[in-house]
Image 1 (spheres, protein in one colour):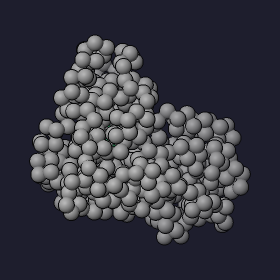
Image 2 (image 1 turned 90 degrees about the vertical axis):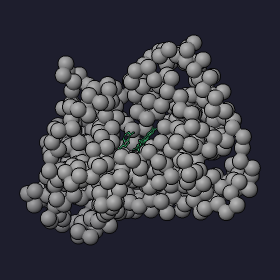
Image 3 (image 1 turned 90 degrees about the horizontal axis):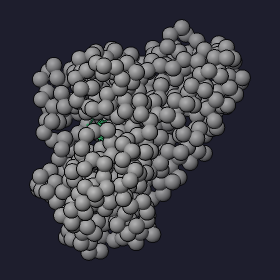
Image 4 (image 1 turned 30 degrees about the vertical axis):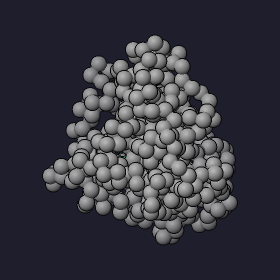
Length: 471
Ligand code: FAD
């Protein structure tokens, strides 16, 4: 009987353990993607990007004489229906680690097994399964550096080639049309602008990795902190949907290190930051929604998402060029440089004293590389409410940070049109990407700071000293 391969955040054909196992004994394979509540609940940009990823996977499968069946509804009900229609005897998938997906998957597994269906999950979204990494005294890591030391020489399984042949069923089950799902609907104006900065699919991901290993990794350790320079891998949007496996990135990094690339070790370390985020989320899923340390529940954060200062932050109109450049970069490209993410998160939670969940939600709506674990870890880290010790004084100064990391103002110029005689396309595209009702124009004067670097720092430190748990 046939094997259903249930694709989720693993939209690739190579290095895909579930697909490889399904193809191993020549049984017909039925690739399926289910638009359940979890997929339908993605933020606008991530959902739009998912649509593009699915189109690419569809094309890749069709190129192999195969098809992707698209169905909508609760995963278990859809799978049971498909099993009834096709007589499939097995369902394979790659594991997910966020609490909602874990709950769904364990229900699916036990239900299908009880019906005699061979329901099997496989690793492939992470380098190391979270339960296989523990401290010397047992238990999960709470701090990154010891986890890095524990895993860096562990060995990662060799890559699996794409299956040589995918056997197909005598007839295909009915499929929804991807266009009917309207996955890009909530992006409105932004889609056309972001599309120029985004590509989808396994082939594009592999090409991006190759280019990075060929050109970027040597200087990655030096250039990765400069937001005005394309010095990072740009792999996050592919990793988020599993269009490339972290194993492939890891092996590429190892090879580059052996060949003497100076930035390779730093790249490997960043891949382990991604692991660390998943490790935290798997072992402490409350990181997604609540303060890691309960004492922060008393902190007097602003919680009104429509407060004028919060609106200025969302619109990239705080008057702080580093903050505004980064917020606009996200509107135009669907991504934001890591230093930008740290600066805007610090400014929102410290200078504007606003709850990190408001920022987390805004990112979840606008990032094409949205990832539940990395986003939550990043926000809790910036806010100071995360698992690392005494970070309440980590208040980035957006002015000195700009002087240090954007000394020639390349980043500022790329994204802020106001005040420039001949603004570049990127800066102007911002006004095409944002909602028309914001009423913004490149001819507006650039605003004065809503909260200055120094005043915001003092307010935050005072509040942290009085109310915060860390002080
Ligand atoms: P590179 O510098 O080339 O790094 C290679 C890969 O390592 C990345 O693709 C990513 O998978 C991983 N990585 C690098 N830095 C980090 C990090 N700090 N934490 C976890 N993994 C990392 N990353 C996301 O993928 N999705 C998110 O939703 C997300 N939200 C964030 C929110 C905040 C507030 C902060 C501070 C960081 C967030 N990050 C997120 C992490 C990081 O900013 C991005 O992974 C990185 O900018 C992606 O660009 P790149 O692929 O060129 O990275």
